[in-house]
Amino acid sequence: YKRSNGNVNVPRSDEQLGVWVNTQRTEYRKFKKNNGKGKITLERIEMLESIGFEWELYSEWNKRFTELKDYKEKYGRTN
Image (cartoon, rainbow, N blue to C red; front, side, top):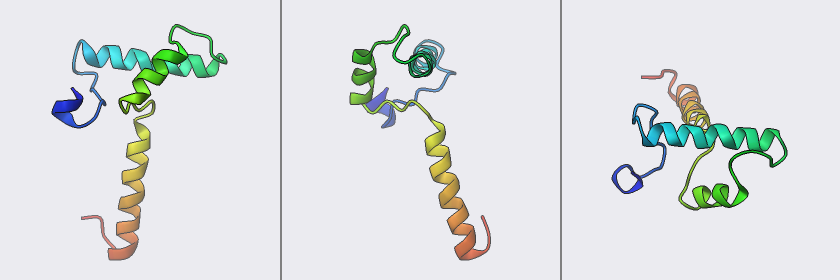
């Protein structure tokens, strides 16, 4: 997926890989919430991070929102 798309942000609409990726994010949140206890291991977390896995996709959304806000401040419009 990464070779074809340049990232590992597989959409949920990809019925097999997307569902698996979403499960990893869910298990990661449980891992963090429960102080390292859960189905996902630190080793698996590190493996996913080594290929550029993003745990929170909204970080990209926030980055783009900030860019849009800066653009509007500079040009007075968003289109």
